[in-house]
Image 1 (cartoon, rainbow, N blue to C red):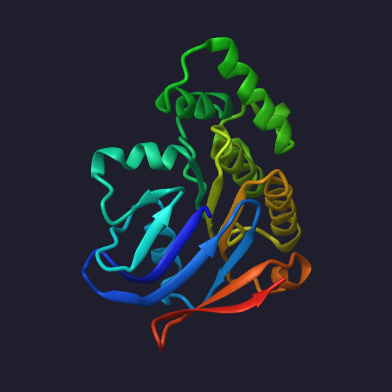
Image 2: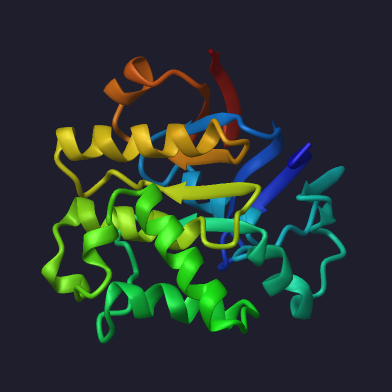
Length: 226
């Protein structure tokens, strides 16, 4: 089990509780949607997974075998290294090329061998269909291309889990479909995908397990399991 939450309470940084009694399990290769209105707790739930938000109260809160209730701050980077994080606004480094964006991540996560780093960068760019964009700057790419590079960055360290916060939110429908197809392909290799979305048509086109963040009840509710 990659994620095992039992009776987890999730708070924002100001101490406001947004979700209570969360039961949430995710295993290898699963594709999971988190839906709900703005402010319902979707992003807070995702942030708790990679310890951007601390969990103070739970019966159990484990991610990738790590107990979040006892996790020390100095060990958070090691946990995050085992997962990929994809943001709606891409968060690519604007002052360097696609290649150097990816190289920066590899160096920051302990890679040393230049040939191995080059090979891995080529592999992930091929996986997302962006081999011809390695020397481009982020501003020279379309929104969909930037998101593909963000996904390439997320899979550099062969993560067991990818957490994607509204990865299609700024994209047109055709481009959004392409991004979801790419994430689905990644999930078929055994990497679990958890993504929040407002794009309801995607759920019919690309079925998966669906959880609703119910703002009124402050609960996470399983809606569908396909």
